[in-house]
Amino acid sequence: MWEQYPEIRDRLEKVELVIEQNLKSKVKPMEELLYALSNAGGKRLRPAFVILSSGFGNNGDDNILNAAAGIEILHMATLIHDDIIDGADVRRGHPTINHLHGDKMAVYMGDYLLTRAVMLLSRAMPEERMERLARGIKSICEAEVEQFYSRFHYEISLVTYLKRIGRKTAMMFSYSCGEGAFLSKTPYEYARILAKFGFYYGMAFQIQDDITNLTRDSAETGKPKGNDIQEGVITLPFILAMRNSSDLKECVKQMFLEGKPEHKDIMCITREILHAGGIDGARTWIERYRQKAKSMLMSLPNRREKEILAALTEQIGH
Amino acid sequence: MWEQYPEIRDRLEKVELVIEQNLKSKVKPMEELLYALSNAGGKRLRPAFVILSSGFGNNGDDNILNAAAGIEILHMATLIHDDIIDGADVRRGHPTINHLHGDKMAVYMGDYLLTRAVMLLSRAMPEERMERLARGIKSICEAEVEQFYSRFHYEISLVTYLKRIGRKTAMMFSYSCGEGAFLSKTPYEYARILAKFGFYYGMAFQIQDDITNLTRDSAETGKPKGNDIQEGVITLPFILAMRNSSDLKECVKQMFLEGKPEHKDIMCITREILHAGGIDGARTWIERYRQKAKSMLMSLPNRREKEILAALTEQIGH
View 1 (spheres, rainbow over the protein chains, first blue to last red):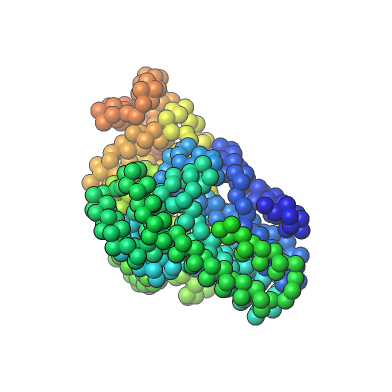
View 2: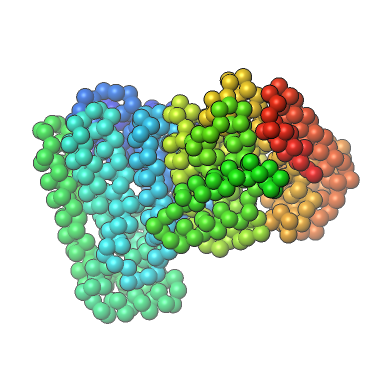
């Protein structure tokens, strides 16, 4: 993915070293598991955003690499805990920690990474920025808890959904951009724009993820197709399709009343969502956030980093 | 418990307000759960140790109360996650979060509290002390993971056990004392002694906890009697008893080979541990750590706080 941007690739390779350094543990089976997880082929989008955003200031501080590594480790922690919540067996084509070693082990692995991340970030960032980090993690937890409590509530509103993905995903993209900019002493105005850019990018990114959950096979995503519906999690394509089709709404209501949906129900519902324009509708929302993200970039000075951010924004959903 | 020490009780009541303030959330079902957990009757030993240790310096900083609250919230987080690992249904006489809402909810509740705790502590403590906190949390996770991997290994050594409880329990007591002392600008020499005192206290405290797991009924402890053995966790009374009785060792080996022990096996093994002197042996280790803790106190100036710490040390196991 980063081969076409060698300047970013080179710095991401340094971030890898920092990540590896920070996953060291005297408890060897734990260290091995974490190395395997780290090397399972994540795209390293968040660290890339830290680095790219730092390009609008006076680049070059080691703390930028440390912060980038810390944010990726934090992301790994949330993935481990998400996989427990989702009961996922596979992530990025590898068995999950909860699948291999049970939920219990996955709990502590996640805690451990969360702590390593906060530790690394608290060294990289000045104290007065730590509150932002804590708010970010708090938001993710609140969003996941809210999502859990809202399962099988088919009448969840568009606003609730957008708030949720904002907290769950977009805030950390925003944080990545904002902290990268801060660490390179980017002028305040640009840093604010970059943080907003990250937020809009994150919104588009999560909507695409929710579409993929409905449309792509588990071989590609690592999660069973329609996994969200099965867990009773209502996403944007669903919400928009139900607006267009009262039949679908009635059908979903019945399905959830009967308990956890079966595979054949999910296949059927997925088709209905497609027919009722749920996927297309969700894609217009991606477009909306993509435009917002791009309009933020327009206010930034012309740099190579701006081109790359624009290209990444263009790639969502393609 | 604190009625006999009104000066500590009054300050602990202020700590309660800080805890409550920091458990506030826009997600109301979450807030209610956390308030219930917080009010379930914990002894607040760790915050008390922060406050008591601060008494050897220039008392009175608000940050002492914030740090005390942060350490208790951190402790609450580890309890929630421990209960998932242990599959515990009851804690302090109340149903656990994992029992009420499933493991998944308990994961995020714990993450949320862990973050709130780190957030509060990062405001209370200067940046250069945050590394100690991260090391402390890392230790707890490592100990729990090591314990999990060692389940049903009946030949675990005394050294492995002592290292584990050091990481799992004693380090946070040490941290509580050390940070309380630091925040009140206690002379370095006393702060170091207090941190050591906390460590020894914590060792004695955990050994007592492991004895209680074998000897007391679930009505008192909230956990089923012999819960540790059932989970394959080998504690000190066990290790010492096996040294004295090769019959017991053979019996445990057989029991673990057959898989998870049944209730009747546990009752039998518990009696054998008692007969082989495992409980008495463990009590001599409590005594050893109690003496070490008390010898630390002897090097401290005579203050009311010293008397209270000595009394608390005396109370372990009585």
